[in-house]
Length: 137
Image (cartoon, rainbow, N blue to C red; front, side):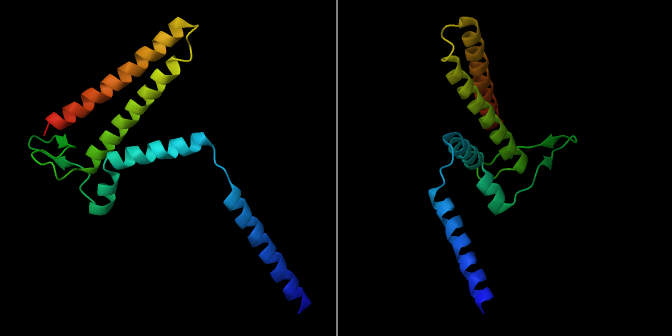
């Protein structure tokens, strides 16, 4: 009986130790920011709609071409459309991060300008893609 109580007490000790590590854990700010940005892109891109409604991936139009956006309707979407929007939002976030990083190179103007130019280009491309998708309806 003493062996069982010893094992039980050591199990309780390890559970308490694990609980204390979980309570006092501090994840890095980078990890928290990355999870928040990924969740924002997922929700804004329509990922929750895709999980709940289970729409079609894409559809075939006349002429044998594939459409990935749902024409003539704002209440429906395909999975490919939401994936496209999520990718475009991710490109925009990368552009914003590059423009932010360009401010750190004030004493190297060429590198700062290149980062700023590439970041603004990413933002502009994302904007044009989203506007095209909205106007294609």
